[in-house]
Image (tube, rainbow over all chains, first blue to last red; front, side, top):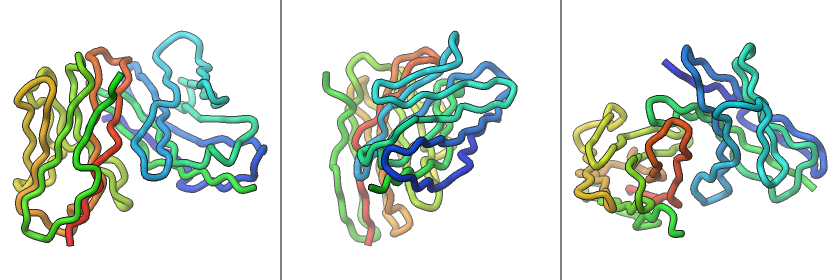
Length: 111
Length: 114
């Protein structure tokens, strides 16, 4: 069975600092990996996804994630965070049409 | 384009009452999902449909929960009778078939059972 582990439940960071949100998955088959973001009191929005090809994928707001097959990881990074990046971030793997989510990481950006 | 539309956005009900949550998926999408989010358990898949047919309902907590999809543009999730432990945010989501296709989420229905 596929599963997703997000190693950090909360990540506090100062504005303009770099951040990495960690995600590991387990799967015996080819995977499709996703990062979703949930702002307070809102639904989930797709941030970026890996399907195939280049292992580095980027979002329009400066986040990037790298698919590492040997380490079964899909960590999310941003070189310089903003207050507006404060949200909960969910890593997910696609399985038989459905998404299996990690428990989420709450990113808190402080001024 | 309109996204996934859910109603009601917020509902407070008394224990024992029937609750019906509604969802309109994105037009043309053939997969529809119902998720539940709580602090304790995170995001859980309750049930999903493909072409209006339930494919996997193993996440439905118990017989008090039921979901229907009478047509391609409408689905309901019903809880009868409701209990305080059902308090959660319920998300509806939809997607096109294809493993790489994105699943799009609605804004959620925030349910409180008192």
